[in-house]
Image (tube, rainbow, N blue to C red; front, side, top):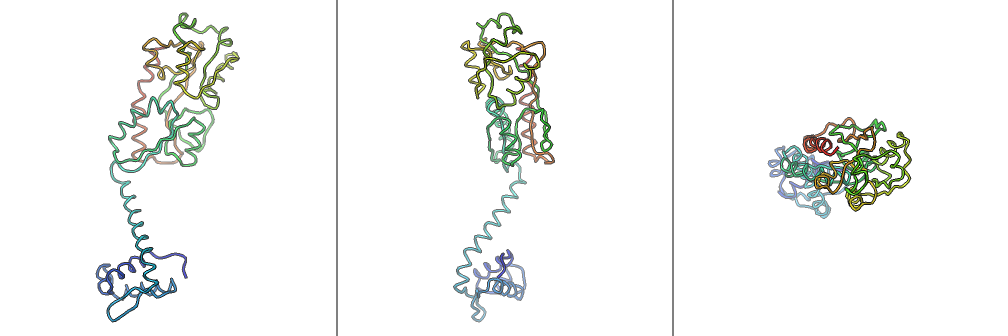
Length: 309
């Protein structure tokens, strides 16, 4: 017995079972009667059992044929469903989009992007995977997401492509009552003794901050590590230390005077955001549209940066 069943044999079998006549089955399938007969004989030989009893011009299912019929019908139905799903991918607005993003991007970037995206692709199924940069790169490489909002990493990723969106600058954000708020600067000699509230140590942002101050010759002695930019803002607002954040993440608080932006030093601490995907992939229309919307939504982030710098 062969290991697999031929789809054409399944179609001929189901059609003959329904029609009960080789002549009628051949007419429906646009085949000759002998072609249908040959196909059924081949199927019976392959399965090793008789599937029909021939009585005159009629064909009746045997017990084996009755047992095979629901399986054959399910096989054909699933094949039709598979073809339909592939055809839907070609239709405007259908398909799927799997996006990876940090919690910060989920909070400040994705809501506007996805609202606009759904207008163009109303039938597209969207899945969001939230996590820090190492997690996003892992999801990309394991094909669990199609595209990810990430920071440009200094590590050369030969298997990933990075498309830049915007550049931001990390600064100290402090309470209006903090001494640095009045001075509008952070004296170098005071930074080491200050409590700095930073995003978690596994993040690319933490590594950038740590590297920056190492190069400046400043040892970070008192660090509070949090896994949420929103939590960092709340802690700083009540006067606990100085947070290190990009102004666009705290635009509302800065506009209301709840936080004050202070440069970390003479040299700027910059990051570059973009969309990452597996190198060599040609982005389909949905992903290209998503990337374009991300660029449009974030184009004013630089102006926010300048306003509070």
